[in-house]
Length: 476
Image 1 (cartoon, one colour):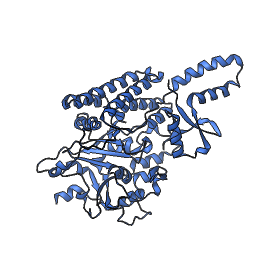
Image 2 (cartoon, one colour):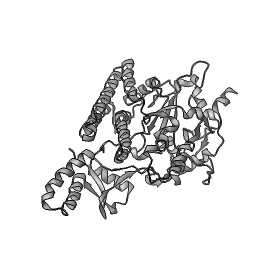
Image 3 (spheres, rainbow, N blue to C red):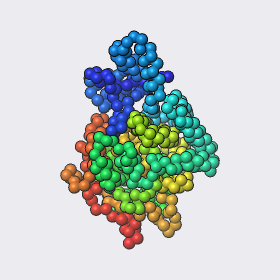
Image 4 (cartoon, rainbow, N blue to C red):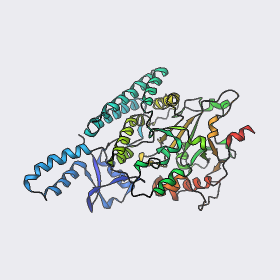
């Protein structure tokens, strides 16, 4: 098996560096190459205090420390038992950092096939997964993805969609993957899942996380001389202008989809906003769900390797079941997390075929929207600030310019990032600022606390503005 690399503190090599989330779940950080570990270390920590070790070397070192305290006749027995026990307990998956960037369509196909094969091998190599038949489930889902993509690339949308529908059907009943918006892990973390709560965190904290209003945002980049002042300027296109809709990740050209992000920061990234371009202006509005919107069924694709490993590190039956459910859906997350760095806008964007198929068939599984991590982030450590939400507006037609789904939200008028005086002492705070105050982002080449960034302040500013019912405005 290919060796992995870990990061350890020079003063305490017993405990490798772990990823620990807000709910106190953790998992050892492993990297495919020493270079990847060094890059992460340089970007996140003071490299003077840490060193990089091959995982096998670290394991052998720890084992020698233990053995030196044992009688010689127990050393061989300890070797056998510790290796067997370690293998059976190993629930980490490693080497599947997302998103993945490729140069062209051909590389997307080959790289996707390689990643899916590697993931199947990773699961099959773990005794704890194999003994419960998880390898078979993963193989089945990977095969369905490959079958669907082959048909979609060949132009047989009907058959390709049928394979994707069968894939989604396997996730029905899994509340972590398909849930109402207000209880989705993508937006509220583990707070709706009482059995996953950490004993080290007060129950009142989780209660507040469950009850606090979620915050969403939507942005547009326009020429600097253009002014956006009305809600109609910021929402998705009306039916009569659907021809202006582009070919996007979760919507095909000519179809309308509402895209939202949990921060103005991720919205700016999705719009490819360049704050050094003095000819452009960024406008942002805030969105909130009403009682109807909270009940929208959402497919959660905001799943990452660190999350899977963090959940698996906690040794309870419920955590194990949840980790297994995440692993089943992760091949679909991999397949829809590619970026093709090709400048030709006229090329067939085959990396969108599977995600667009999801949008067409998800209603069969009762799903009304998709939560996913931005592909424009540097890596999958961007949770929670890099989560997006896509909701297709399929009920529009002649004489019905806007979807009834807008009746699920209230929103603010758009404001320009550079055209307002942001009050840092806002009365209300966005959901991310309230519960994830220590999240860091990469901004202008530096890792900074999000709460100190201009986008964080814009989030709070918008949350304190007047929220309007868009459908009521349209009907006036």
